[in-house]
Structures are given as C-alpha cells and as structure tokens.
Length: 240
Ligand SMILES: [Zn+2]
Image (cartoon, rainbow, N blue to C red; front, side):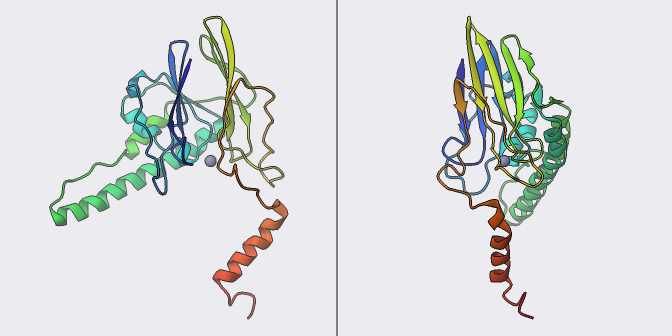
C-alpha cells in the first residue's frame, strides 16, 4: 500500500491524495487550489485514465473542484460520495465550470488586444456534466466493497451538508489495515448540522488541520461577533 500526498500537504486548499493498494489506484478528494498559491500541487504521478475511482469527502471546491479536469483528462471510473455531496456538486461543479469559461473568455479578450496567445478554460460546462454522471452515491455508515480487499464507509463529520470522513479497510497480502481520511471536520452544537462522529480506530489517520493551532470562540459568541463586524463596517446602523 502506498499513499501519495498530491495537495493540501503544506497548505489548506487543493486537497488530493492517491491511495495505491490491492492493484487499484484510488484518489481521495480532487480539490482545486484556491487563494494564494504558496505550494503548488504535485502533478498526478500516473495518468488520469489509470485512476480506478475517486472517494470524495465533501463538495467544497477545494476538495472537488478538479474532478471535471480529471474526467476531461481521461478518468472514467466511479466517484463515491454521499448523496447530498453529489447533489451539491451538481450545482457547484457546473458553477465552477462557468467561472473557468468566463475567466478564459476575459483573458482571451485581453490577449486579442495585446496580441498574446489564447488560453483554454481549465474545464468546460460539458466536462462538468460528464463528471456528474460518474457519481455513485453511498449512504453514511454502510460498508461498501470498492474492489477486492478495499472497503469504504462514510461517516458524518458535520462540516457541510453531506460531508464525511472516509474509513477505508485495506486487506492486502494477508495484512489488514484501516485508513481514515478525515476530510474537513465540523464543530459541535451547530443548529442544522450533526456533531462530528467520533471514529474509534484507525491504523493510519490523514487529518485536516486547518484550525489545528487555534481555538474557536464558543458558538454562543458568534451572533455578537457578527453584530460587531457589521457595526464596524456600517457605523451608522443602530445609531439612527
Ligand atoms: Zn470544506
């Protein structure tokens, strides 16, 4: 078994890991890098067509945004996610494709004026539509055998509608090992989302650490914090 860290290893966005086990290549998340690009994602070490499946933890673009590029590059396997993640991706990947197309159009208008080369969008709406057909939704808390020796279970982590940690049981050459890819983990006591599930065991855990060195203020303080920000931005509000 081998895990290759392709993105989000030094920074927050562009989450992507390649798991090679039992003769299969499985990508865990396929995210787009967003914001300042401090560390570029490594290129995929294998052709996209050699990836057998994608396990998607949640719909945020920094975890899902490169899926249409992957399928445009030759990937044709299944994308496993929860049903809600699939539904959200159906909106978000189409939207992301429209942004890619309009960005390229804008750059090309400028390029035509300055005589520079035309660019192609990273992917198109039709690539996104093709990608959406590859989704295989799986419910929370049910084990599914992805291939001989590889079993997957999603559990709710309360980060976003449909968000999940992926538990993967690998049985290779007579050795069993359990991997946990946490995905982004939510907070407790949120009004709509469930509290994150506690996973009892993992031999290897690959865990997000976005707020690893910070304490969140209590949820009960959020409303007054928001009110403070609004009154700083619009000082006249509340005084008239
Ligand atoms: Zn997220």
